[in-house]
Image (cartoon, rainbow over all chains, first blue to last red; front, top):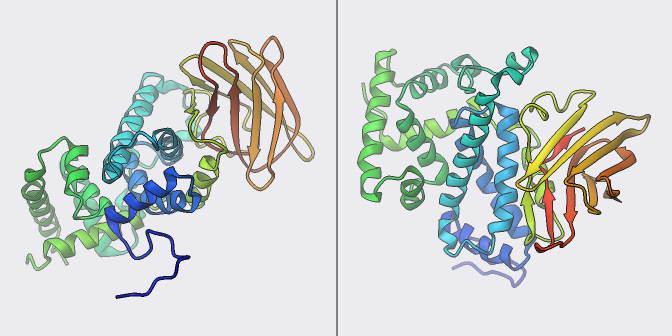
Length: 200
Length: 153
């Protein structure tokens, strides 16, 4: 048992989805500290979801902000606080797709000097961006997985491994198939690593 | 061989995601600033119009002009460098006597009202992380505030 003072915010000592549900409830009542906790802890999830959709870094940053601004408006409409992560993932992905398709339809509008800043065709960094040798092999293997496996594994590590509901909802998969599918994706990842000379 | 367990591999993957593609410096601060608004309820998010607000060139010395939109309002804004900061000239379409607010992180905000042609100007705005808000007055729909993501000027 831990002693807590009355000054402790109600999310103190909680973690994961439970912590964020409590923060969401507090944020609804105007608690800005609660809102900032959500931003600090869930922005990495939003960032990587958007980058996974192939946006370059500056465009991804705009989308991250757009998602959080849209979140303000939805603060009172998110009836199920535990659905927050799923809402963020879904909104981030939808917004990223929207920006990407707008870019494609007017692709020539980008000045040439900007293209240099785009690391690869799909906006993700090349393996060379990673210094450590093991990391580089892992990143390179990860990037060769089917897109759906990349998305699933990315969400798994970012949304928290226990958040099957959020991941299932965002992926449009039945909850029961997340575990087995993830297992198969990890097996593929191991096979790619082995093919490259060991998974260690 | 396959000595890494699923959990170990996921741990490694979490690390490599962070190292290969870290969030931009200051992103959390800019998000916190962008959402630190008076009221959340009437917020409507404007999107930069493609081709005007090219991400990546926006933090360059002379950002020029940007256009942002919501479904029933277009806002064009141009920035002209001054000695101390920027002069902002803008135009709302369709025009209306709406209040335009420019927030600069650490420097409060400047406010003006668009004229009957939808034009507005703020002659001296400090540089910094900037957000533009348009407070739309009633006319049929309930009052709303159109807000943009931040620009770094």
